[in-house]
Length: 514
View 1 (cartoon, rainbow, N blue to C red):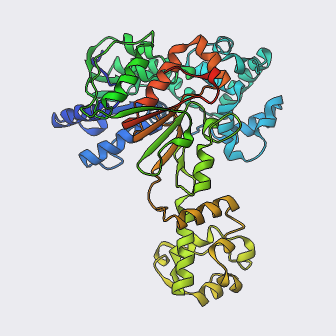
View 2 (view 1 turned 45 degrees about the vertical axis):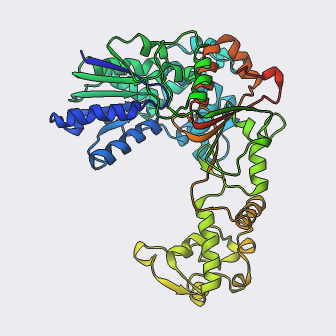
View 3 (view 1 turned 90 degrees about the horizontal axis):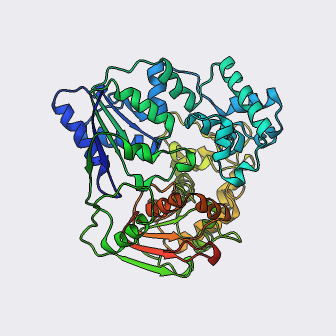
């Protein structure tokens, strides 16, 4: 059985840095990197751990064999090659002709995402992750979702889906973990590190327990106050109750005093939590209540604007107009990690201007242009510029672009707006023109990010705005599990390095009272 150290890491206290120090200690003692496992709940956290370890210790990507998510660990340990893909979902539904197949028409690449969103498959996969029967899992789902699911059909899909996966030799994420728990041999590891432990579901905990029964030393890190995936089966109580030497990282290097006061008020409302010392930085910071996003001072500085639901950012009838306002003003932003204007689009605009002005361009830059040309701008047979790596630096003249790469000659008289109009939507063309007129920097990372609270976990910014609206479904679920709601807003406010802005709910009946 492992010698276990359990780290409670409140927001900004350097939890990952502490874990990396533990890795360094064991490396100094002669432990090889492939004898260390760093397992995390999310791909984002696992990749961050691997990236920081490589940067700090100078490892190659192949040195850190077991720095990964729990399902990736099991996949590697069991040598699994056939992992669930979108095409499998499509084929299964076509084979069995279940009535929900209508949800999966369209592009195959989106089928896997659709599975996650579909209530039937969601209950089935959550049941496996939570080690429960599908019937019991259904009764634990939110009422609105539960009403969409017919019990008899759920059982039929579950049975058929299990049979199909077995016949095809397909493994879902939960299948990979189950396979290792039941049949796998623990690799020859000397150190086990588990990050974001508060987000682990029951199946993941059983995996960790199997590893801990063999690995000599374990470090388990998390923060129960940041457990915002309980709807997906997360068990913060498992982390709180785990035996081991407890270490509280009590000094935040991010959260200033005023923001910390708000965070502590929220945390005090969580009924099931581990009491812990948590100190702010020496900076005072600022918190402010505002009536709407319209008065947010976003003209300068770095911003993270958070909402509990995505539609509240989109400017629809029930939400705020922050996204629409940024689009209309030509202010660069990202939404859930994706730029509103992709970098390749900006590079294509720049490349077209270069071609027109200098009358020449590299093949690599020409390739960027061709991504946004329609078939009417390019002669038949030349739908993309050839871009072998050795050819990308080659300079070609305007005439060669026409003769060798098939560009229609009359296109050279067009502006970038005209030549890209069939591939770039009118709204985005207008946005780029406005941003260029305002001398906005379109090449750097946008200084304004819009995000749901769940997708912003682990992020931070100097200025954070939190929309206090709740959807009707959230309001209903909050009556059943208020702690989940408190934890969500606790995560949101603790993203702020300097200033926190709390935006009043548009509908006062949905107000979260801070």
